[in-house]
Length: 254
Ligand SMILES: Cc1cc2nc3c(=O)[nH]c(=O)nc-3n(C[C@H](O)[C@H](O)[C@H](O)COP(=O)(O)O)c2cc1C
Image (cartoon, rainbow, N blue to C red; front, side, top):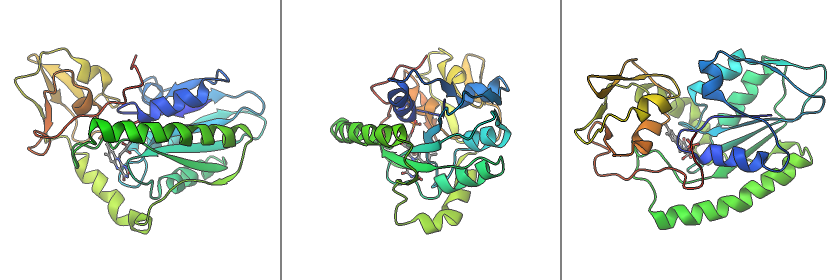
C-alpha cells in the first residue's frame, strides 16, 4: 500500500510508477482525510510506502495530520519506506515522519528522495521547460533505483538531505507563516470553473459570487490552486504575477 500526497503531480507520478508493476494500492492522503478514513487492514508482509513532497525541509501539514491519526490493522511486521520528492533536498522531512511513526510503534525502515522540478512558484520562478525535462529525465533513473531497493526491502537512509538540513528547526516554522491564505486571490481571468475549490486538499477554497474565496486562515500551501488553475488566474500577492506555473506533465489528475 502506498499513501501519497501531491499538489502538482510530482509525488503522484512517483507513487504511480512505484505501484505500476505489482498492482499496489494507492491511497490519496487528502481524500483519506476528507473521508476520515484512517484505519487500514494490511496483508501479511505488505509493504507500506509514504510518497509526498518536502515543504520547508519538513512534512506537509496534511501528511503529519494523516500519520498522526493512522491506524494500521495487522498482526505482522511490515517494511515501511518513504519517498520524498523535492526541488533540491529534503532536510529533516524523513526524520519528522520517522518520529510520528514511532508514536504508532511503526518503524520507518528506509528513506529515499527523488529530485523533481520545483513547483514553489510563490517563492521562486519555476524551471524552464528545458530544465524541467532534464530533471524529469533524471528522475526516471532515481525512481527505478528506489523501486529496486524497495523490492528487495533494503533498509537504510538513501535520501539527499542537503547541506542546510541542520537549519530545519529555523526553516520549518517559516512554513507556518507562508501557509496563511490572506495573500491568495483570483484575477479577472478567473472563468468560474471551480477547479481550484475541487482540487484543494484542505477544502479551504469556496466559490462565492462566481470567484474563489479562501475561507480558512491557513492551508497546506501545496500550491495546487496557483499552479493548476487553467486560466492562470490565481495569484499570491505580487510575487507570482510574472512567474511561471508548473504541473507534472506525465500525470492526469482524476
Ligand atoms: C510550500 C512548499 C515548500 C517547498 N519546500 C521545499 C524544500 O524545503 N526543499 C525542496 O527541495 N523543495 C521544496 N519545495 C518543492 C517541492 O517539494 C517539489 O517541487 C515537489 O516535487 C512537489 O511535489 P508535488 O508535485 O507532488 O506537489 C516546496 C514546495 C512547496 C509548494
